[in-house]
Length: 501
Image (cartoon, rainbow, N blue to C red; front, side, top):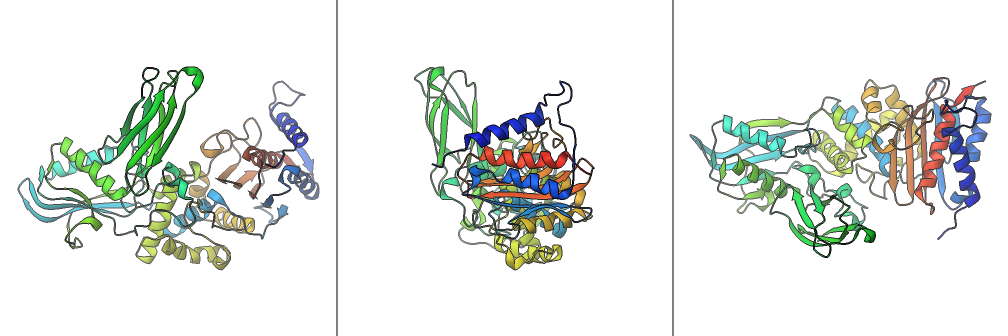
């Protein structure tokens, strides 16, 4: 393992502490403004990046005034880097430009058969187009709210029995749920939930684990409470001095979830998650349970349309009603502030569906090429293999990110884009960074992280209130990621305190 330069860490922490707790004042929590020329600022920033802990890594940086176009700093600006979740800037910017801020995902509910009074003699069809919001996220944490509303709508239409199957038609998208270049050991984790035209609860189950008596197995429950998932409980309650440690593994291609580890009595409840296999069928199973509890009897099965045998044509299904998601402008906040991979993957596929008539990642990327070219980014010089940035096969340059940020700054949709970004020291993935500095509530930027990658790109105002776009990406480092964070934060603090002479 590479040794860490302790002297540099100490100096960095001393500098950072003086940003946060300056010695000359007990009231003022930020240093005085620093006056200088652009050349002086360039040298100061260069000194920050000359960190010996990153001698075997690579920094790619561009910092540019959005007023004058001057470069405050550049380093390896035209080299390709793995951007991690900074790729979401490309996905969300393209989504705004191609779909519009008021775009809503739709889900159509219809039937194939005949209505005989309160009885549907046939199949109920749910036709999805990638809505990622059918969960509790937008509904006061009530994950079943949308499905209960659908049940109420069926009751209002006079339907109280379905003598047929519940069919999930997910053919708007392909069935490739995971991105190219994703690691195999991500599959159980919530941040690698598979994309699908029909989804529920981010295509995950919530797992709640509570201690029991020492030496006994823990109590495990799941939400939604569904027999679609099989849980194997291997969690033991142990004394408090032993510590809690939980691991979850879903067997590949199944919905068998193994939960291992220990939990202590002082850990009142431990919450974790698992992805599901075949999100469409999962969604239909949960919907069937909701309908039954609402008094709507479903005599058939809950099925993915691909599993219907013999194959049936549901293209001429009769429409009952259509459900719409919140506006894209609200969905972008989940993607960028929370860095939500599943939402980003749904967006790149719905772009493919709306522009190319079929929701695949490759169609989505191809549909984005024209807007990237309009931005001034040669689409032939970037590599995009997913919508979220989880793939290590994605490659972009810092200069391309700055070009995108410049374009969006001058776009009619800028406010939607800007409002979707995490705010330093306030919310999202920057909630705990740059606190008690002038960068707090100033920096709006997208973070990015996969192993050996740390990225931060967005906007900041200098001490002169001059808007600046920046992109700071580290690749191939072996020291703890917090050291990369410290460098990015130091640069942002330096910019926030800078005033021109």
